[in-house]
Image (cartoon, rainbow, N blue to C red; front, side, top):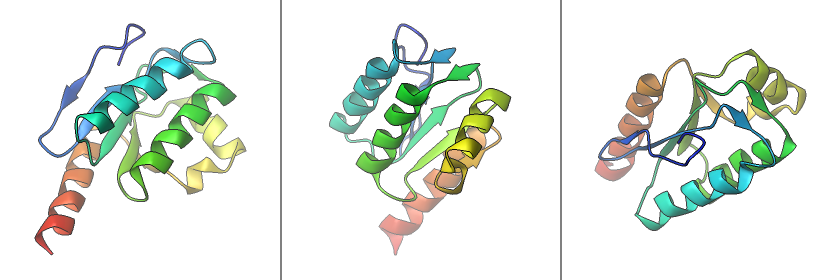
Length: 121
């Protein structure tokens, strides 16, 4: 989503939400709301696209952690993580928790394949 909360796109199995340029306390509630809406629509896997995110604070990280808890292990990926977001993930050791992919497309492919294996097993 952008600062206004618009959807970046959906795959049949994976929802992509574009995080705002600044994922801070003023936008954390919006991030949480977009995740909740996606879950209400039946999302089972989600990519949080950080490609345009230049800053993230504790509130923004909290929104990402809440998404992770709501979706469960292996159903959330971060994509396009830049230097500022990467630094925060490393400082908080969340880099060990989240799947991080270079692009949203890569993350969608990985999660969609994972969902297919779970459903087809």
